[in-house]
Image (cartoon, rainbow, N blue to C red; front, top):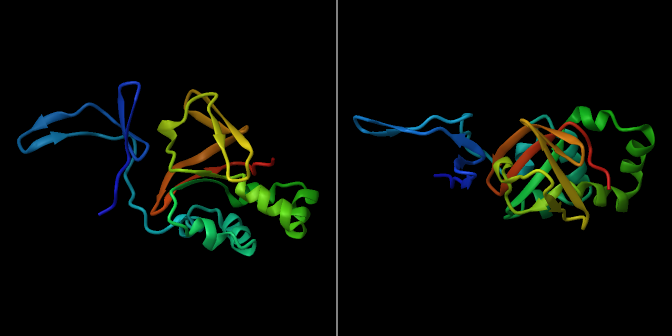
Amino acid sequence: GDTLSITIVGGSVFVDGNRIAPGFEGADGYLYTMDDVLVPAFGDVGEELGPLGCITMGELMFSAGLGDELLRSDGPLTLFAPDDAAFGGLPDSSAERLQTDETWRTQLLTYHIVPGKITTDQLEDGMILDTLAGVSLTVRIVGDVITIDGNQILLKNAQATNGVVHVLAGVLQP
């Protein structure tokens, strides 16, 4: 079986980042409802990227030699992965630099990785996250919208065997 992360934030209980509503007693025990469906991790962070629409991120990580070292590591890690449309929206100069400047590419890619497994219920407005690139990210929360350095999280809490993936609408740039 998979291990579930249980957190309590402001009196609310979360399982793998999904809020649990108050339960009620039934004939055979308690019944609880959740905000979302729990989906078990089917692979490591690297294997989760394709089904999440983040193929470009995976290709760049592996071509930079970071795939096995980071995405397939024991973790735990949190990956803020831009979707493929985000990479397609980069200015031509950034897209070219991503292909030709190995040092900048490594810094940009590791800027998307935070050590530890952090689900969205653990994020707070104004929180600072330290990345593997040695640069900090700022979390903003307005209503149900969570942004990381101004880039909205489109899909949250995709579980992996070695961490969690949050899909971003934009590419984080240090």
